[in-house]
Image (cartoon, rainbow over all chains, first blue to last red; front, side):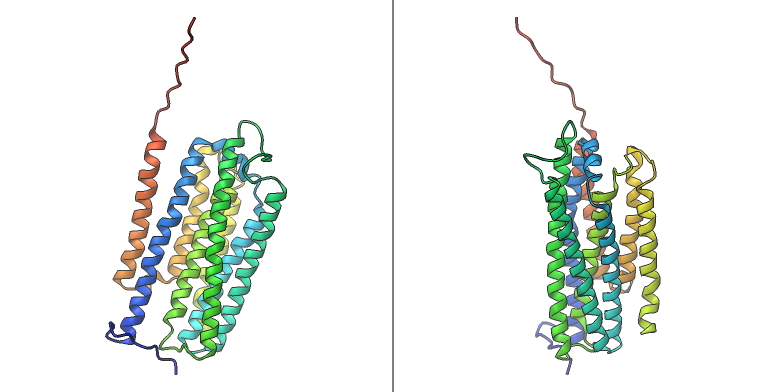
Length: 213
Length: 99
């Protein structure tokens, strides 16, 4: 019922699944460098504009960012439980775990939307009429450029993750996964946890560093 | 259910505890020079997710090499990229006035 089709270039289903997982790790390595360029931008820009970055960080929504961190960490935990369930052949519990993970992901995106709306209404979008004036305005605008680019890129990754989870649920309902064959669940789990890791780095860079003042 | 959740629960609780430490550290009057200390709990959280949820320790040599390569090249990127801006000496431009 749930045996994966083995393509011609693989010796066995196990070989095919191991290759899929190694490939996912390679893809995540490229993603590390993709976000790494963003972290470098923060590092260098903050070096030249420490006061502007600190002032801008104090204008971010710490409560929403903190709730989102707890939500995302919990979603990774729930998805990892889902992977554990399918490893024991319990597809129904895995589907439930996927639903809870997706709900937590949607909660994250919704809170992010609320935060962006507030940022717009508080005139924190770089450009004319920017809320922070004075000598720190330039640095603060660079900070908010980083903030919007980083959070939008992260949210796009979240949306891709939600799409993948929906695909997993659809396949699991058709009986595509079993204790012996569930590599796609593991691959999506790696991606979802990676998106969590990216947020764990972004959270202090955006909300915490510079906040004490 | 218990057999699945039990090994993952300490990872989740550990992440929440580190998150609380991170949030608390942000309000300590550390000063600009020590602001980077806030990133230490974040680094520990990344490690915990990597080994707890992503189960890096269970994978074979190829996957581990990819993970190590990611960290290595990230350090190269951050190191080389920040070396020039961090060590550059900026001299003020001399203003020449003509009579």
